[in-house]
Length: 153
Image: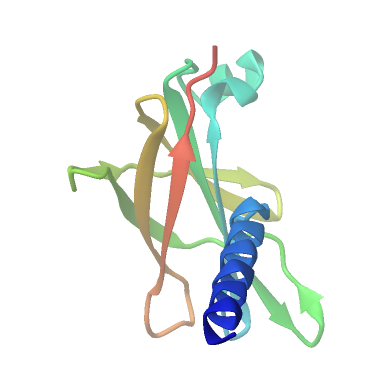
């Protein structure tokens, strides 16, 4: 009887683990720092229309992507659009090869955000380390996130 219960318990654990593996994982795209929120994402450069890429001097290609960073502030229930900041960062691959990201400031009226183009290999897992210095905030806002990138066909 004890062996039967032990086997039943192991089966339940295995089923639970399998159920968790099969669940879609939520991809984080923001991190809060008090009243400030850093928003981030990575996308293939071919997602940008050719005329927009040309206007910002961005190179499009199946093996090129961009990191997009913005920071907002919520004060008295009102959230600002993207605020100006000094943004720096790097990306690392699994072999810990590091590449500094060069951010371009995009100012669209009241909203400011930052883009950093880079080249990648298909199915490459990359680690991003980003730091933002925002006026009025004593310490830099630091975020780290991972993304697996796939080349467009």
